[in-house]
Image 1: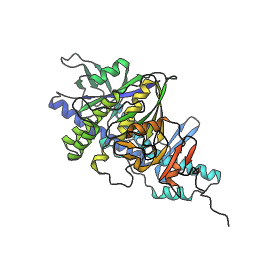
Image 2: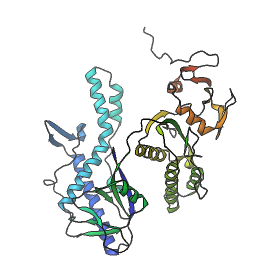
Image 3: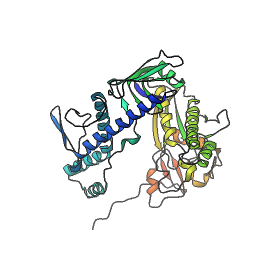
Image 4: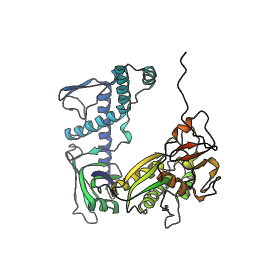
Length: 426
């Protein structure tokens, strides 16, 4: 298996003339992308693909966006070369396609329901209320390919490589930007190969690498994993993310973020500190002889709540993506499970009660089992248990119950089943 990873390289020591030329080129490139987005958004486009006719007409909900368009017959006055315009139009197509994808899926379901004779009023009303928002490319990274960019080894002293922008327009000439590799890119270079595509901004260059991943491990242990603020990841074999050598934990870093002014340099620096700590903590975990990790699936824990700045920058998505990335490289299978009631369940006797957990400590009110709360939750993820999601919406949701491998039981031993939601026929 293969996957694509990115390395980021800071641009430094550019003279004023070259820096201004690069800034002007990026500004004009973004304007070109915006022009082609407007063209795709406001015009009806028909493209014949094999035996099918694909039509993009957003006003009439025909959302088959092409992968690329011909720029020859589209008049646009600019200093950019035809090669760059081709790259800009292709990127505009991918941006528009991404913006339309969600609505396109809903329209597909609507047509499917109509063909099957099912009710469509709710979905139709939802589509009427939803409004498509035209994407704004001001903050996008230009995605260049081999038509107008390349990376070569540098002959310049103190620099490893050079990034060359060529055939981009007579007024810009050839822009050569020297840069150095870092520890991350050296690792990627040793494990894979550099792809022709790359991105560039005023301050950084982003290289793309094709990396080979290990084959899936078939023999080994199955572990549960729980994520948290005090310890980034806790595994059911007892492994926990530790404080970094400087004494920081994720908790202390989040407190630092909450003290900073949003958008300031100190705030962005604190966010980088959080991301680096998460990467370091997950890299320290040992996944040898493990074939599968059962990971808690966190969703909507912010919905309808004013959780404050501290929890808002918890970074659960970053933890999940880093963990999935590391496990896929090692060939470890990942299964995501609902986290409902798992932090309240006793991994020893199966008793579920909200007061079992108190912050970082877990103490079962039924069998007196005590453990670290995150470790207890990871032990629950490791076990094969029936889904408890239906209990969230149960008409008589119990405060205390037993969650066993063969079902759910109240304190008297009677089985708790799914509520009957069918309406009585008159």
